[in-house]
Amino acid sequence: MLKWVLMSIFISLHLLSLGEAKEYCEIIEPEEEIVVTATRIKERKRELPTNVTVVTEDTLRRYKAVTVADILDTLPGTRISSYGTVGALLSPRIRHSGASHVLILLDGRPLNGISLATSHRLDLTTIPINNIERIEVVRSANSASFGANALAGVINIITKRPKDRDLKFELSNEIRSFDTNILRVDMNRRLEKGGFVISADKYIAKGWRENSDYDRSSLSTRFEYDSANLGRSQLSINLLNSEVGTPGSNRTPIEEWDNKRERKASSPNARLNRNNSNAYLTHRFTLGDRPLELTVYGTDERLTWVNPDGWGLTDKHSENISKQLCFEVQYEPFTNLLTGISLHKESIDQKYNESPKDGFSDTGEGRGVFTQLKIPLGKRTTFSTGLRYDNHSMFGDALSPRVSLIHSRTNGRLSLVVSRGWRAPTFLDLYWPKTTWAEGNPNLVPEKGLTYDLGIELNRNGNYFTINAFRRNMEDLIKWAAGPDGIWRPSNIDAAKTEGIELITEVKTGEISHRFSFDSIHNTIKEKDAPEFVIAGYSPLYRLNYALSSTLPFGIDFTLDSRYTHEQYSGPDKKGKKLPPFTLVNTRVAKKMDNAEFYLGTENLFDTRYMLIADYPLPGRSFYGGVNFGF
Image (cartoon, rainbow, N blue to C red; front, side, top):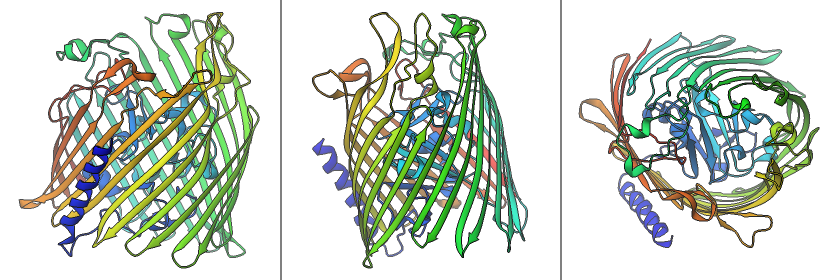
């Protein structure tokens, strides 16, 4: 591990030295960028802990990401669990956490419900990317701000706001390998007292594997109205409908892949239909000259699973309807002090058409109170604290504190964060009806964790270098296991310890921009009665990313993105299937001409064989090209 760390520091410092000789070097991420996810309070990024990353709209456009997962997988400490090509389940993990330990927000509102089983591991393919303005990632527990399921971190996806006084219209069409066609339409206009944003897309793909076709339609809208006397109102509505074939696992050893065997489906007739809708209404005004924000939001997710070849009655045809409705008040009575309350209700209706007796429905209610306080300690040092109390009808109370200390200087900053997070048991964990093979456990308690984070950032002549060291302890992790009677039940039996470092360098030298990141994470797990901690499954020890973008002659933009992932195992203690190390290289060229941009790209340039989940092969080299028109 030491040699990797030393090599990473050497490369980072070398990139810094390249930029030092150029007085016109600049930081890729604007230092004055405003971030809201870390504390709920709008703050400059330079005033926040170093474990916060911001992905700008320019970065999304430059890398031509198809899904949110595509760009998150390039960030330090963030990984994607993928079960196949687009349309397959894509879930984020932060610092080798479980996917259910990451809270996903859309404009600050949770998309994965507190105890909704299907939403705990949110599928990132359900979030259209053409309406995204930026993405903020906090790589540490943040339940003090947002409550449940922020045990490992928070990803806040922030949509576009009305900008231009004149109507702005964008149309794009992209063609990819595997008979993939993507059509996107965007409209944006800023009016005298408000404005609107409308985005829509149509995504059709035949798929790489057998029975992996994908058909998606989505519509995202945002309307704003400003009144000098009554404040500002904002309404956002998002709709999505999709159908995807789910080919299932394929156990062909990776060394025997021949571009045919690994494409075969184990469930050639399985289909998943998804209908998602979410909406929120926010009104901001002043109370005693201080800002007050009222928000009501709701989500509705409907899944239909059909598999005529399913092994059991509950696997042949099922329907799941998950809903949540929330109300939130947020008030800043003084500068640097924020307080608020949150009320929510959620429900689930699970049906098994071939076995109605195994279906069930239930509801849950919760409430939370939170406060955030920022205290300046001199001109350069700031102490921040947050505290949130949650109470839920299904599993009781949770208290989530957070403290941070930030020391900023002209050429860098030092940050220390200690925070607690928790993840709620799902409806299925608690109340799965007793069958011949499974049963829920109503005595489960929330999973809990404590994160320690220390970071240093250096800026010199516009060059940027960060190193973070962290440790995360988790307890009461929920695990399903078969009992003496052969029935599977969940219980709070596991604990986990995770520690590691992250190195990040961003610099521009002349016309070439470099981004280098490296993380080394030691992730261990232990059952309650086990003698010691062992390496957890799907926990590669090293990951390294390098990205380069440059402007070539004739105004052609060139981007290269490369990623190395160390070996990993599907089971704990290096058991299960071994996933060999792999390197992926992606390239893209683009040319702007008047109101149009033309681009071409490759993914997995060297046709690498790899998997992120055992027995779920991923494709080799693929190509794409497209055009964007703006009016």
